Length: 212
Image 1: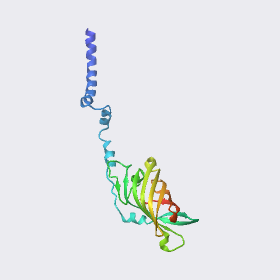
Image 2: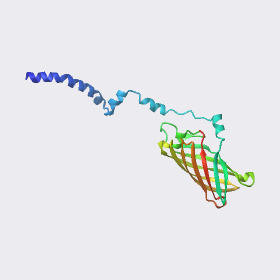
Image 3: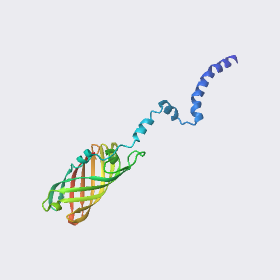
Image 4: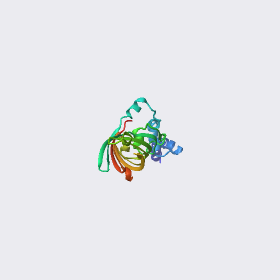
């Protein structure tokens, strides 16, 4: 018995230390991850709070000027092909792939991640085709809806889009459908648009260059 009592006394401090370590989390109802989070302190909260900060997005003169630089394209229709240029504007965009703590709505100025991580946008797209005819007949106006989907690295490396639009050209109305792929954070891409309307039937291949 004396030996058993001495052994119990030796084990008592160790048991007390274990109880002290385990007692806090157990008494508080903490999950097994609690001690690890406590050891890390409040550091993990910092990045999450920073990521949830609304970006300072607004129109600026330099941004407006670079939007005047068009994207080159090739227009193909009824046995002829002509070069042209296209401008793009986004009056409204809703992003479904960004941080849920941030506002998903953007108007005109849209960050690449917000667009290519997954979004739905309203767009307008005037085009000028260098073909014979009156100056007014060389213009095409499109307005429609386009959806973007990420393919690699949340869309930074590769993304795609599908869309449809109403088209106005040569005093005629029609419908157009399009698909596109993008890389380099969405700055460079290729879009193919097809217009099945008989009077405006054509295919347009655009080298999309976006300046953010």
